[in-house]
Length: 210
Image 1: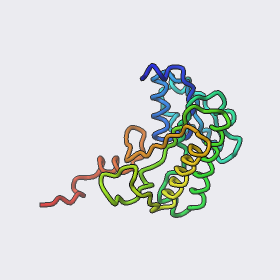
Image 2: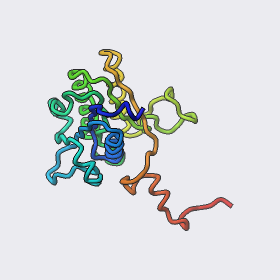
Image 3: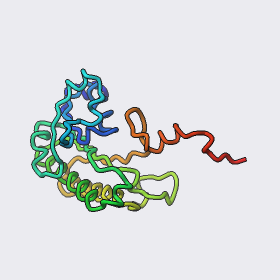
Image 4: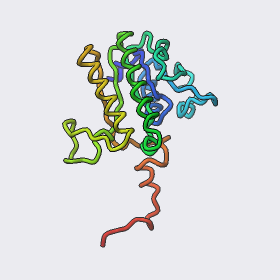
């Protein structure tokens, strides 16, 4: 399967994030021709892509912009074969404070990615969702038939994105796959995430049952 990726033209949105930067790194290892879409910022930072080995940074084509702009993807999407869409505002607590910003950003950016993918004839779109769409588990283990429950505005935005992606598949036969990661962890992750928090927890703060 690794040979299959050699020379594949792949676009990664949200490439400057935790998962996105690892995905870019892995795709480069597999020999893919990678374009990374990162959101513009005045500091010129490319997020966690700046922490990749210098030889990897030099191999990535960087496109800077805002996915909420309808034509932002034209340059990035042209001539691509596969698109991994990871870009989103992901902070759950922030979504309580700024629900409109989170919902508008996540939904609009996903819609623009899907429309551009259809326009440019992309062979496969991998849309990254979240385990948050399931809310508190009603049954365990959770499977794909578990009800979707929006327990935060962020979760609601991801449910909306999932359904828009599904609608593009059903309406236009767009080749979309949706992923819903659960508690990913690893290098370059924020220490605020659940797994790093548990790993670094002081044992004296843990209550042990007798």
